Length: 138
Image (cartoon, rainbow, N blue to C red; front, side):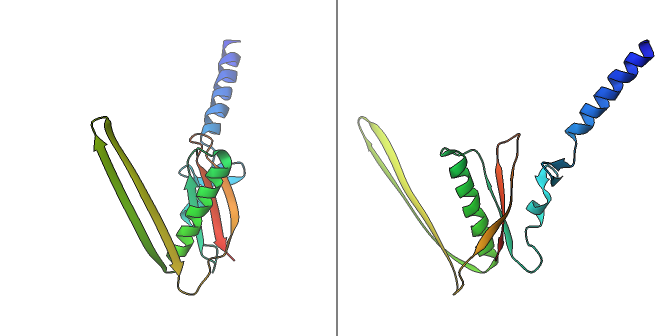
């Protein structure tokens, strides 16, 4: 009887433990805990990019928007992007304390080309809450 119980406990432990190291998550093949397309975003002759966003103050909508923006920036970078950046930092102090305000903007253009892409896949890391979006040019 003791051997049977030990065998059952060992079998349950093995099944539980092997589930922790599964290579699939919601039908997505994972490599080092990330979707395989994270490492190879281009799809044949089409340029691809992956955007990642952590938990966002504007909820899922803000998280998705930020991840899409990052994926598009990655695609534009691969197409030969021209980046223009502007930063301004202002510091004011008086007897009551100090305040710092700042402004930062980035603009990117691709010579004569419009960046058009569609979402190919989305995946959320259930542990960290990060959202991964894979976009590919049309």
